[in-house]
Image (cartoon, rainbow over all chains, first blue to last red; front, top):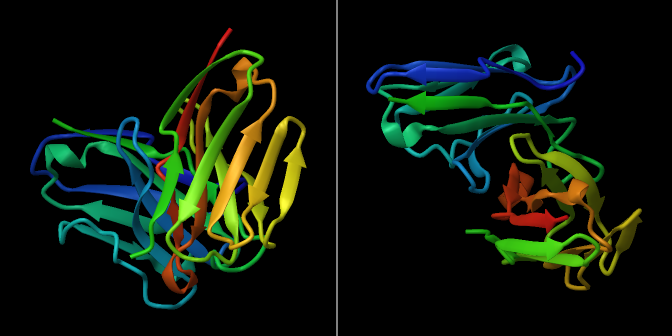
Length: 117
Length: 111
């Protein structure tokens, strides 16, 4: 596709339910990132996938959060037993190569706004 | 761990005034990037700086990378209402993994 696509764009769920957020990166991009942004706040790093390497999960806030990237393309972020503090915009981004590489910029999707009620 | 800080957190200016945001990293960066996020939107890449002391310009925007490659600045000359948004700096994380974003500077421009 032309850009990074995320679905759904909005998700309202009840506390305790599980949710899955999907990200379709730009074709050919080896790196994929998930960030979380609470209202009026900065970007909180969650997880990073680079090619076939083991993902960097150091930003996941708890074991209720997990993510996978199938076939080096589509990624799914799963939040189990959602809590109200999980409410935020979840942003996915992709880049051609790793950030340490010159001329590598992150392309962001529109995000999924998650509301836990 | 690596930290990227930005000041100020908020800036309100009158249209036509200049604006500057500063970014500081706790570690030396191989490169630094700047992004702009409009209200309700997602971050959009503005520029990448690589060389020590590098200065780049995009119309009314001037970006600078410090000599020690630990700090950077974004200066907007004669702000316009279209400049409203949050400006983030970002650098490669530890071992070059992921992007570490600063907390952002939110710019408001009063017409």
